[in-house]
Amino acid sequence: MSPRRATAAVALACAAALASLTACGAGDSVSKPAGARQPSKLLVFAASSLTDAFTAIGRAYEAAHPGQKVVFSFAASSDLVQQVQQGAPAHVIATASTKTMDQVADELAAPAQPFARNKLVIVTEAGNPKHVSSLADLSRHGLVVVLAEVGVPAGDYARQALADAHVTVHPKSLEDNVRGVLTKVELGEADAGIVYVTDALVAGKKVASVPLVQAPVATYPIAAVKSDGTSFVDFVRSSQGQQILNRFGFLSP
Image 1: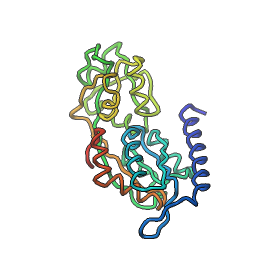
Image 2: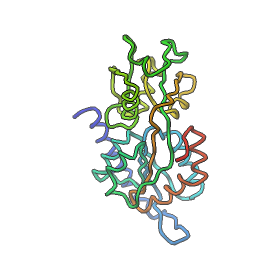
Image 3: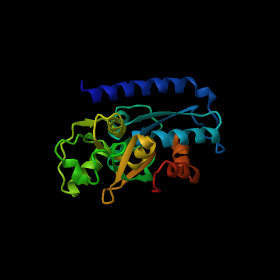
Image 4: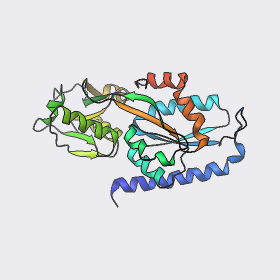
């Protein structure tokens, strides 16, 4: 079994365990004004690039919905989709591309809706010692570049940007998710990588970033896998949810 499939299998097993906890705590559910019962725990599958923003949104959601707990599973969108297709008990799924979300359209309780957008940047070691200023620089001999692997939205967007710029890059490694790319650059294991603006903001002074004006813009959709997840979807798309996303660098849909 490949490392990526092993990771997906472990995540699926963890999701199943979380579902068992949810079932055990069903008696603690709170009722919405309309009378529809909500689970005491909501399992939300979300793209890795949403880790910090959704953690903050989860806290805000719990404050607005006493008695409910949001449990997150963050991974590459492609892995999350695979887990939902295999029956993982997620209430909500949020991915970093409409392409990945389309793959689980038949498993959703309601059609997916866009809730945010994100831009790409090149990240380098702090101070940009290799003087990277454009996509073309990533093809320089001796420059160690990492990207997210094929099927992962961040990697697919990056490859599209490189193709549009007619730049050929031979990455040293292909990471399971965009945060893996960021980590390799932060640790000095790579000279440069392509991630989202929001990832670069989270890294702060650990990296330098080079904007990519002509690169594709990522669209993030969200959907309830089970009807119980609708309230969280609505919260993410509400003005309060949008303010939190904007604070972390995401653009409005």
